[in-house]
Image 1 (cartoon, rainbow, N blue to C red):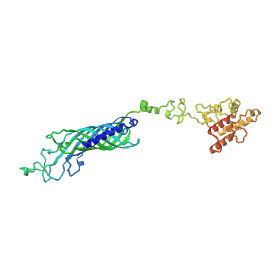
Image 2 (cartoon, helix red, strand yellow; image 1 turned 135 degrees about the horizontal axis):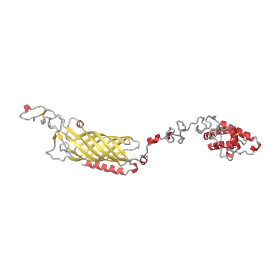
Image 3 (cartoon, one colour; image 1 turned 60 degrees about the vertical axis):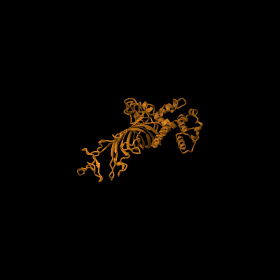
Image 4 (cartoon, rainbow, N blue to C red; image 1 turned 45 degrees about the horizontal axis):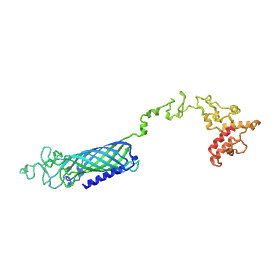
Length: 440
């Protein structure tokens, strides 16, 4: 009784510890349903003095459980166990050979403590205990299949008559059939129900968030000594060695609920602009219908001037030269006209207003040379000299020859100096320097 009290106190301490943990560690789980199988081994008076171990008389069993995790360290479970226990006295002396087999039907509540240290932990040791109610009904193998009672003789044989019978010369040797046909204990009249305290040890193997496997054993301390139909000074015990599988039914998270009605398979295939490239891979999602596109879903631009073919009035313009928004090359004559119209002057927002978007991202050296030559021609005229735009103070370092005019070569030299760290210049100043080149 002292052992049972100690185990029950341990159970209460485990429950108290579990509720003292922060509730934020609780898994979002509804319940876990488990099913297992294993073997039962009996420990009691019958078979105690046998020449062979108790594990020679194992019997199969199965279990079902419903477990609720209160947090990552502790759970409560309702457990059902069904199986049989058995034992035989197998000795060389001439004592009466006892044997029995009894069904066990058990239901109980367990508290399980998990040594769950790390979130990514796969192998989780556990210990559990609780209280169970079970029924049993011992039967003995006392007769063979022909109804002959077993009589154990001093020579170690089994006969159909007692050794001291008057008709001893007619006694026949018979063998046990190991069919437990006779109910035991009718003359004693003991209760065939009792309580037990199971103490379990094992490991849980996390396979997926929804599925895990348990391996372990559960030693059951019963409150009766009559499972084997023998009254003894100590109560009977039985060991359940098992493997089980648990299926976890998880509560959907808030995000999962929000996206539960979305058909992601359809979204993956959606093509809003009908260009043959799914939206998730389409870099140009609003392409007009009928326009040919590349693998990224962008309109074909054969001459790579930044103007797609379907808008390009000159689809095969020369590379490296600027084009307008319609894809037509801006000749020197056209640039001169734009310059005369102050397209590059103070009244224009910048040179970006008259160049294609692609060209503005990276103006070519050839184009900058064209602009530079035009500006030099312009400065040869007397009226142009008066309209010279002064270089901003923080950009004057780029005027390497100090003539008040930024050339394309000076820009290239400034960029090289910027990268090798020989001048104190920033990337923002580089962009402003290029803009100033077109506006000067």
